[in-house]
Length: 460
Ligand code: TRP
Image 1: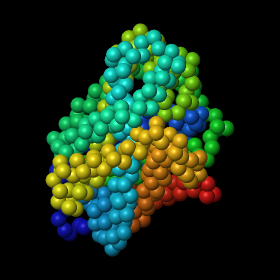
Image 2: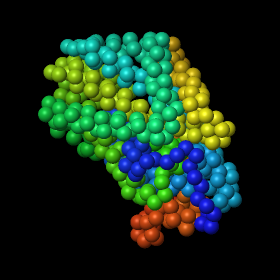
Image 3: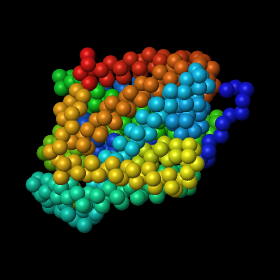
Image 4: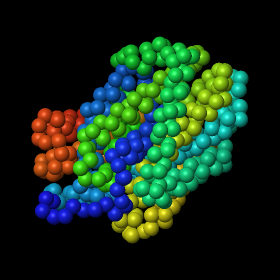
């Protein structure tokens, strides 16, 4: 594309490099870090799982994040059109848009169940603040959680509120909506997490928690847990579905893709580990079990908050933190679809945001009902026991669609795009760092994703 004019983003650009880092970290740091990571680490035995997850993040996640940003900035459109345009430019192939299409679909699927869990977080802000957990016992927290998830009307209400919050931000556009939100919410999130961390160091079973998180016990690692670790690496970094590509489309020329990606990957990893180091010390200090599944932070933690001094304040803070994290992620989940509607069909942004929000809201009903009316309705899943609608959506999107999308993105950036194009976008010369990125992108990431993927679904 050297000779022709660079394309311009139709949605405006991020105002600074810092805002871009905040926005991508905002999308990355979410329920994945604070709700999902601790509970899947707990379910999969801790240490060894954490290690596999870290390896996936740095050898697969980081190079793919760079790839998504560089493809996005090159195409300067929503992921569907970007993959088509850059595919045509680089190889005369337009079918690469399938990656964008699957990404937009994954965004719908993920947000539909994400919003339900985010709704629990909103509900728990009020429960903590009004002292529901004060002096509560084990059966008590189970009942509070069961009463919430068992009541589909109440779940619908929180799911609706969260979708309204998401659409409200995205409708306002890149600079007035997304930027404003992350500028306020991300610093608040880090501040809250640090306060809770200091509390956990002083009052929790900190050493026991560190042991649990970092002592690797490979006997407990199964093919499925390696797939879960890989899927989670994609999920937590928002990769494999064009979301980071969409954000990359708004990145000003000349901003370093390498350093921004490193910043985001570190921020996301540190926050996930910090979340674990807040949650597990509190869980262990109260003699509770780490392998509790999705209810971990909604059942075990409130129990602990109910017993500790200042629990009302710390508990409320924790669920505000969780809601903020979910909010800055949900806007990233619908941005690709919203950008696509505005660019492809010339819809106004607010209309597009309402439409996407509406469709996701309807899909979310399936997840809402998985906890009550349809709790016994189980769906077949490749390489796994049948699960509820909620579990199956999560598995389909996180463990299948995101790794496959990521695999195609890596192949595209590593094999389809010519070396000139990628090195021009990355702008780090053609020395060791560029060569390392290219090797990871061409060989390591695709091979690892393919292997883990086939093994995880039971094909090898
Ligand atoms: N990374 C988010 C989290 O950890 C979830 C997520 C997955 C996401 N894919 C995304 C967020 C795309 C925004 C965009 O909770």
